[in-house]
Length: 502
Image (cartoon, rainbow, N blue to C red):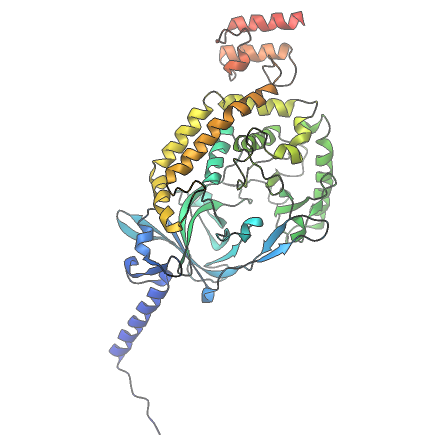
């Protein structure tokens, strides 16, 4: 009989520590060694220490899937009679660790732990429609336990399971989100740039972003039992649950809330009736009875300022807080700016595809709100957006993004890898577009229509008096009836005289 030699306990401990160290070198998520010793594959030939990537001062997200399975997707073409192509991707379980350099020290600021359903870890998948075909793919991460990956200091408010990693290498999404805040969109997703590593391989710098979903504290607040978040969706044919559109045959309505597994027969029946009424009323003068005019106008203005060319895939998300008549359909969030800054001296393509009913409606409430929102920002718009983008350019975050460009091997269309060329390119877009946009928007306005309701009558006098007394907002170009570059009681007199003469 051959005897197995007895291994000394000290030798065993040394062996295990050595094994752990080797595994740590292979997998940054379990690394016990310094981040300087953990090598990350930048491409097939170049490696870089993890500490070097962290030193760029962007948060670093390291994802490790179980068995290092690479995220993949199947591109699914549309069936006959439908349009486009989308992707189906398996949800891969694994672990996520986030690093930041704090006071010169590479620190783990979040660790999901290994995957255990409903307890720890996460699942990752490739997301998107046409964007899923790009070399640099977008991802969706679903944590098993809620957490605020943006570290905003109020975990009870901002924690969530669903997070997105978007390819925003041209900074279009964050630029558009700035416009959303200026215009007054009801919700603008929180976001932050990060460097992404998956299974030990660097994938580029990404925008870590909140997803469109129900979260009554910080995302979209709809009733838990009878609230809805739905989308007029070109890719409805890849979803198991939807309701139909009679107005736009290429589109149907899919659901962000309730989940497809939870929506009931009664809820589906209600939503089919709702969208039928919605599409019908848009062609009548009573549309304001059913829609939140402010959010629809703000959404349209954001896309017109950004010059969005994507009429087919541009996301149209709607909410209905509950089933009561008081709850109106809203467009609370503007999304998808991959084809922004392309319209030149023309309206965004959103006009042509689905907002034309409101822009051409005899009821001018929508157009009035659209013009009013522009008038709020028009005088200082170019200076404000220039200042905001330059502040970002020179901020810690902006310089961290710039420092990540060489790793990501990004080359701008002009052949420059300088980060400030991106920012100056956006500024140039807004300055070059402004004159056409301002002239076109102001051409929609009825002269001397102070309250933007499409007619000039005594209600405008009341509105103007409120402006003069400081009760209402004053827009110099609109409220200056007599053209003396000042808004005062003389304009009230001039407007009364104008109304009497008519």
